Image (cartoon, rainbow, N blue to C red):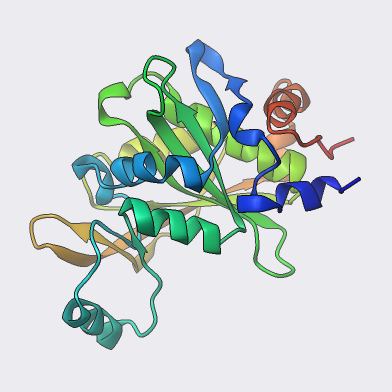
Length: 248
């Protein structure tokens, strides 16, 4: 029998059949592990929402021309980017199997996603999982979908990966940048020193990537485990993701 780690690192980085298992979160929010083969189109739609792209470092809405890519490489040689088309999103997550998708699906519309988040934990020897690409459908905001996705990501980082900390970064000086900060702080994350000119994100007005400041966030394992019913929360999420909590 394959180990838990072998199972989750199988096809598409997901447990067998995981795309059909759901977590029923608070307020009727339904979460599951994402599958790029099935979810790429919806992920691309969420990533390219006008109100979202400013908040996403390194995401571009279309395939850049050779001239555009060369201009970026001249300024930032080799900087990795995500092209938010269905085909390229699928290829990106198929290639980068250390990034696990967690999605909130819309129970009323077949195949529609209400939100998504990515968890990355593949840096050699580093006991930290990074939470990124947190997106929520513009018409479904205010339903606590974002916080529920962050909680699921934390449960995966601390309960399955057994890491010592979770990290996240918020792009600053864009409209509503206080919202993701509040979501993270409410889940116990502590802000770190601001990084000036720390990332690039898309700017619709100029049609190009713009250098922006960034604010890193950190959640230590000990602080997470002090939450009320932290172990029970991990079990609730991870049982649906077909992995067992590793916390005693």
